[in-house]
Image (cartoon, rainbow, N blue to C red; front, side, top):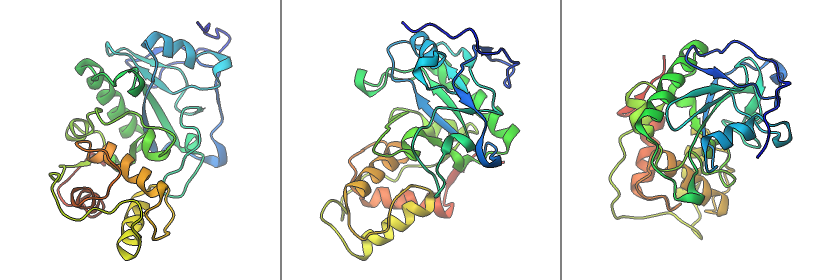
Length: 263
């Protein structure tokens, strides 16, 4: 097991309810960036303590601002003013270096490789309280509360389709719309091309996803649709743009019956 690097300097927590376990894996935010985005992850490790040890070990070269354990304990590892190494390669609304403009919360859960267990209620309540506090202090709007899979489609799938985005948005954290029931009708998918695919790609790019407007339903388009579904239409995550998926996307863009925690 990795040993926590005790040489990392202690600091006062930004969130009053957090314990502090400093990670050495951080730096300065680049280009004068300030936090305007909140990224939620799952740890993908067997135990929360194992994840905490890894995030605080110098050799891991990863970190996060916060870790929320299964029992609701909140641990802060990097000050919010600093650039934690949680997001990796990714982008949102055409901006890369997500680490420089975001705050990251890791949520202890072993993830898809171990069956994606449900998130305990006490853990989700802690994420809710922490996330609302962060967003209030930094003026982060609901539509900029994202999953790791949103900013890195094809590379990341967390926090996963079991994460209760709708519940959090209803309680003041995030951006969501009631899912349109899955039904029949035309579906766009691999080998499709033309104006309908162009329109879909433009809507996804407008929302924020990193996708090229090619007019071809290529592998990247399928992956981006899949990750959109994982967040906003989790009942069926298949990467096919059916009526329910496209309707949900339009509602989010045009604020039709949207649950939004924006200040």
